[in-house]
Image (cartoon, rainbow, N blue to C red; front, side, top):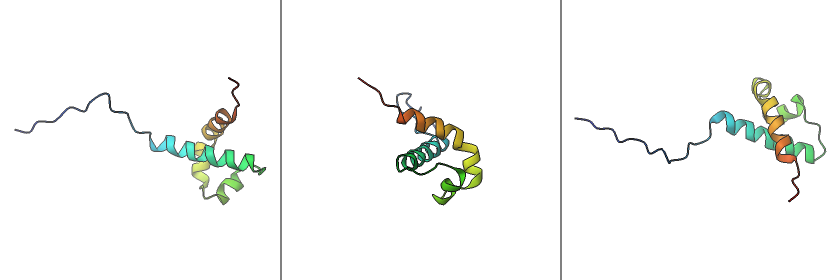
Length: 74
């Protein structure tokens, strides 16, 4: 008889591929913005991103980059 061990619920769920790609694109966008470069489809293509990926992820990545760039005063 085969018994399966249950997966513990306290184990963290790894980030999805989609979230990783959005984060990487957001990082690239922030680097380009802080370096004084225009962030556009053409400049993202020069960084190695494909057009379909840019069309699919750029809106979420731009929002993520803006959130990460906001200065918080504590």
